Structures are given as structure tokens and as C-alpha cells.
Length: 374
Ligand code: PHE
Image (cartoon, rainbow, N blue to C red; front, side, top):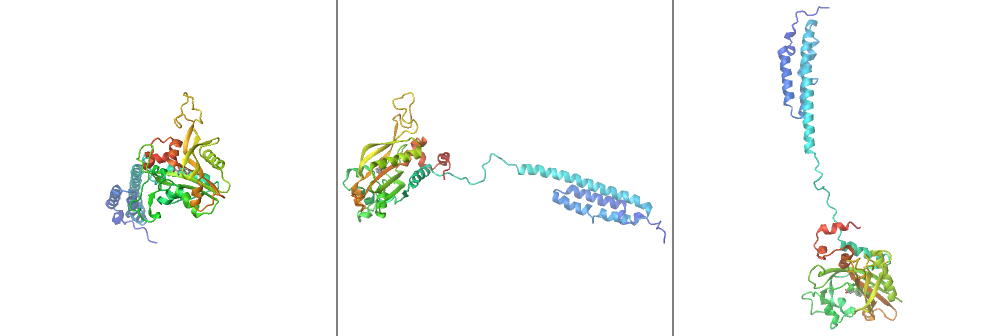
């Protein structure tokens, strides 16, 4: 067995020369200082402190040194590796702190900004109120019927016992459709002034018994102001069956106002005139706010009914036999009742809306507070 090579000079091993150790250490420290991100530092770590880094390779050379040289070289390499790993750890902490600070700024949430979901919007209260009224009657077995808004004069007037010379015809401030006059009867078109023509269409389409509720937009040549609009909405009801009387009409009206305004609500009928009903009546309901208690009581005035105790709803009556005949229904066998009212007006007193223009301007700030009714 040969003796250890005592003349072996560790300085001769290139990788373990003090200048070389210093050089690779300084190179590593410079690379660590230059790493400007955690990813870059990870690469620097592999290159300068990994298994194949110059210092790790130098460390492996130590084993081959004679004993007296091992300690010296080991110390040099160990110190260099220690300095590198200390610098790595320090830089790691620095970069992590920088990243955390950046994330705090970049990912900060400004809770005052509008959130990014598409606003759900709101259905128009005219639509929801009209549907709510329809639902009351659908629950009673009525069918929802609709018709055209551009209507033949015959449906809008003549069939409803409003002949061309009928004085009441001129009280409907009618929009006539230009160019339509002069052709056949059906070609004389108007924008419907009420939803009653849908009743005519329903009677022509169906055999009695007929129970329909007719919601829709109607038109009259009113100027737009706080209480008038040339386009408004109505709901009309028609029932044609054997043996229907005014009592059925009254019971149906009472049921409707109770469903809409609560228990104990009542209606009253006052004589009136409509060509399509006979007898005809104006219908009122008890004021749902003061329940009549403001009448003659100046200490408790009511703005909803102007202390009258009653709120006017609309018109009603028993279908005029002439209308039944125009629709091919035998008035000797069948009778019918009908009523109609405006939705805008109901929305005004039901929800304290003071200006009808708010309903048609399309500002979502008006519709939103009515909430979401499905
Ligand atoms: N159609 C009438 C109007 O618009 C209302 C009404 C309907 C009256 C049904 C009586 C019966 O003024």
C-alpha cells in the first residue's frame, strides 16, 4: 500500500485555489444580488448552490486531498458556501417582502367601485301591476286575451254600439291611421282607444261561456302632462254566460279590490253611460288608506282620496244586447258583464306616484324601488 502523497499540494487543484474559491463565491454573490425576482433567484440558486454548482464540485475535490490540506480547503469552501447560502436566504426574504407589498397594492380591492355583475334591472311597475291583476282573474278561470293596437274602426267603435254618428264616438280622442280611410270597413284603422275591441274579438272567436281578461296599451290624443298620457294601459274584463247579473259583476269587482288592496275592501257603483253596456256604472272602491275615515274629519285628511272616502276606478256594466248580437251571441240566452280601468291611474294612487311622466321616461331609478316581482 503506498503512502499518501505528502508532496501533493492542494493549491495545485485548480478548483480549490483560494482565488478560485473567492472568484466563484463573488460570482455567486453578484448573481444573487442581481436576481430581481423570485423566479430568477431560483435559477441562481440552482446555478450557484446546486449539486452541479462550482462550489459543490470544489467540495467534492476535498476528499482527494492529503489530510493536512483537507481542513484548510474544507474551511475555505465551507465558508464560501455558507456565505452564498446566507446571501440566498437574505435575498429570498427581500424579494418575498417586495412581492407581498406589490400584491397588496396590485390586488387591493376598492369596495366602493361598482361590482362587475350585470345589473339585474327591474320590471316596469305597470307590467307587474297589470300581471298581478291578470293573475287574480286567471285564478278564477279567466283567460288572458290580447289584440292589435292598430285596430279596425269597426272593432274599436261600431261593434261596440258606437256607430259612425254616435255622439260618444267623438269623446274618444282618436288617433286615425293615415291613408287607411276609404277602403273597406276593415281598412279604416285607428290606434285603439280602449281594450274593448279585444272583447269583440274574443266573442267572435269563442262560444259562450266566455271569461276573458284583456290587458293592453291604448291611445288617445291627450297632451302629455302630470296626469295625462297619449299612451296608457288598461285592463278590461268580460264574462258572457247564462244567467249573469249585476250581482256577479259586483262580486267580481269586490273580489278584485280585496285581492289587490286587502280584506274588507268594497266597491260601489254609480249610474253612468257607456254605449256598449246597459245598464252602465262608474265603479269606486273604498279608499284603501283611510278606509273612509277622513270623510268629514278635518283632523285626519287623506291625500289618496282627497278625503272623499272613495277612489274612482273605471267603468263597468252589463254587456249591451246589441253588442252580443253584433258578435253572434243570442241575448235571450246569454248575458254578460264587463269592466275596464286604467293601470297608470291605479299605480298612481296605489304607490303615491304624483307624475305620470315618471312612468314613461324609462329612468331605472323610478322602476327599481318597486322591487322585483316575478
Ligand atoms: N272601455 C271603457 C273605456 O275605455 C271602459 C269600460 C269597459 C266601460 C267595460 C264599461 C265596460 O272608457
